[in-house]
Image (cartoon, rainbow over the protein chains, first blue to last red):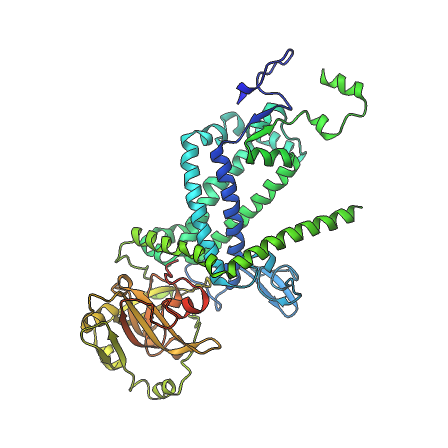
Length: 300
Length: 254
C-alpha cells in the first residue's frame, strides 16, 4: 500500500500523504461487501414478512397465541403498538396499524415498505429468505476462509494490544462523538471502535443469526439437538434471531451514517474500485480557508 | 429552502424505494422468478438430508413441558355431512384406506388401528407462521401400516388424503411425504392427543405426525393413505394443499 507514495521534503512520516489515492480494499473484501449488502437487505426485509405471520416473540421451547409473548407488534381499535413486557409504545402509522400505498389500512406488524414482498405473503417471503440465506452463508464462509488466509482479519481487524487500553478506547469514543475522523495514512487503518463493531458483526452476530435460524428448522433440531440446548428452545432461538436482525439493522444504520460523514463518494468508490483518496487535514475539510495567507501558514 | 430539500430528499428516497419494492413485487409474482428462489429448497433438502441421520429423532419432551393450550390451526373441522355423521357415532363407521402401489390394500377401523402396536411421543409442533406448541401424541407408526400393506418397489411417496377442505374454493386438503419420512420411527397416525381421544379441531379421528417437518405436513382428518410413484397426478401436482395453492415448499424441514 505504502509503496505507491513518494517521499517529499519535510515529510517526517513515511507513507502515503493526504490527497493521495491509494489501494484500500482487496477484491475479496469488495465482492463480499456487496454480495453481503444485497443478501442482508433482502434477508432483513423478507424476515419482516415472515415475522408478520406471527408478530409475537417468546422465550422457551413453545409459544403460540394462548401463551404470553415478551414482544408483540399489533393493532387494537384504531391504534398500532409495540408491547415489550407490560410496556406499550404507540406506533400507529408505522407498526401494528398503517396505511399502504393505496391508502388502505392494515393491521399487520411491519408496513409494506419494509417487507419483501410488499404485499402479505408468508410463502413468498420464505422463498426470498431461504434463497438469500444460502447466499449469506456461502459468501460469509468464503470470506471467513479467504480473509484468514490472506491475513486481512489478523492484520486489519484484530485489535492491537495498545488499542485495547481503556485510555485509547476512551480517546476513540471522544473522537467519534466529536466526528473527528482520522486523516492521512491513519484513515487507512480501522480504528478500535470500527474493529470492534466489524468483529462483532462478523464473528458474533452473523454466526448467531445463522445458528438461531437453523434452530427454527425442525429437521435441523433433529440433526443437531445441541442447537436447542445452546439457545434454550426454538422460541428463544426465534427471539434471538430477531434481536440479532435488529442489531444488524442498527449496525447498517450507523455504518451508513459514518460513510456519509466520512465522505460518501470517496468511501463508496473505495468499496467499488478499491481506490481511496486519503482525507486531508481536518481543518481544510471542515471549511475552505477564508484567508489564503492563513491557509499557507497552516500548511507549513 | 431546507424544507424544499427535505421534500426533494423524501421524493427521491420514496421514488427509489418504491421502484425497488415494485421491482421486488413484480419479481415475487413471477412464476419463473419464484422457481429461481425455490431452487434453494432442493439445496436445503439435500443439505439437511446429508447431515441428518435418517433415523434422527425430533426431541421428545416430558409431560411438564406440554403447552397449556395447544393452538388449533387450519381446518378446525371437516365440514361435510359424511364427516358429521361419523363424528356423531364416534367414528364407529370410520375406515382408513391404504392403497395405491401396495400389494395388499387395507381398510381398517379405528378399533383395529388402536389394537395395533402404538407409539406415544411428546413433541414440539412448529407452524410455518413461527409459533410452536408441545403436545403428546399416540398412534400407529406409519411404517407398520405400510409393511402390512406391502409397499411396492415403485412407490416413492405416501399421500395423506383428508376429509377436510380448505380455502374459499373448498379444495380438499392433502399432503405427501417421501419414504425416508414415511418410515421414520416418529411418523405416526395419531388417534390420541394429550392422553385423550384426538379432538375434532385437531383432526379427529386421525392426524399425521411428521415430526421433522412443519405443521402443514401434519395432515388432519386423514382417511386414506395412497402410495404413489410420482406426485404429478395428485390434485395440483405439487404434493400438498399449500404447495398447490400457496407457493409453500414441499420440503417443510425448515
